[in-house]
Structures are given as structure tokens and as C-alpha cells.
Image 1 (cartoon, rainbow, N blue to C red):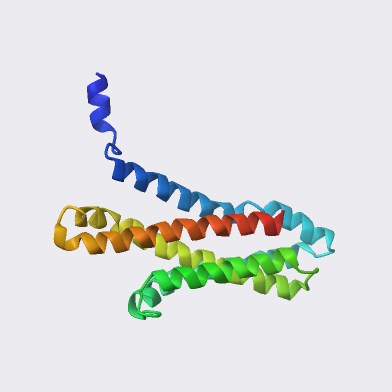
Image 2 (cartoon, one colour; image 1 turned 135 degrees about the vertical axis):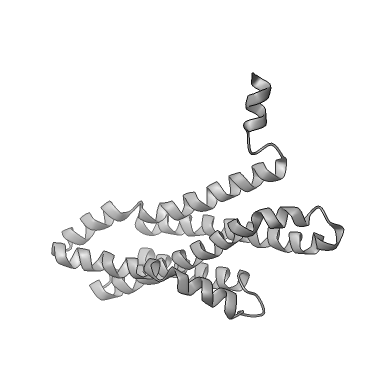
Length: 181
């Protein structure tokens, strides 16, 4: 009976276990984006904003998530610094982290400045979400590349990009927590 259960376990190899853990970390980090929403609503209302202004604030923050297909087309069709994903990942992550730091560390901002910062953060996180999703789709193919000696270089490139993605996502979560805390 235990043997049958072990055969059903999809993460038997160390590579598959590592990928499962890394994807879990990345998507957990993206889930943290919504964590400070209730605190932010209370803070905005304490500043004297109406419910309509708070709703407008969050409406602008969601716009980058609505145009995610554009990011995929952009990263696939227009390489940045000779790379299709890695350069976009670093650029948009830095953009989101910078907006989070500006929001959390600077003096009180005007309403529209905060709207702009939350939109820039949303843009960075939505773009990295598209890039990580692309990596997740490519992951099984990249694992197959380790099998053949002539494709080892592609596998190494994929794993280095993937680990950079996880690192950047962790930094984003840290910045969000410090900025909203």
C-alpha cells in the first residue's frame, strides 16, 4: 500500500522537489501583494479620503494586472539588453522595489503620488508574474535539457534565471513588508 502511494508522489526526484519549492516561494511572494490592502484602506480613510477615492486608488493599482498579455508579448518580441526575460525581470523588479521604498521611507505623499507609486509597484509585480509563469511553462523542458550534453548550457542558463527570479521576488516581499509596516 505504501509503495503505491510513493509512486503517486509527483516530486520524487531532487530536481522536481527543488522546482516545487521554488515555484511555491515565488507564488507565495506574489500573494503577499494583497496582504497590506486592509491596512492601506484604514490608513487612507484616516487621512480623510472618501470610499470613492479609496476605490479609485485600488482601481489604478489593478490596471497593470489587467494588461498582462502585453508584457508577455513585449518580453518575447523585444529583447532588452540582449535578453528576453532576465533583463525585464531585473528592471521591473527594481522598479517595483523602488516604488515600494519610495512609498515606505519618504515623507507623507499626496494622494496622486501614492496612486502613481502603487501603480508602478503593480506594474513591476504583474510583469514579473508573467515572466515567472513563462519559466514555469519552460521548466519541464529545461529539466530535459540536463539529460543531453549538448543542451547542458541551456539548462544552466534557465536555472540561473530562475534562481535570480526567486531572489528578486524575495526582495520584493521584504520591501513590501517594510514599506507598509
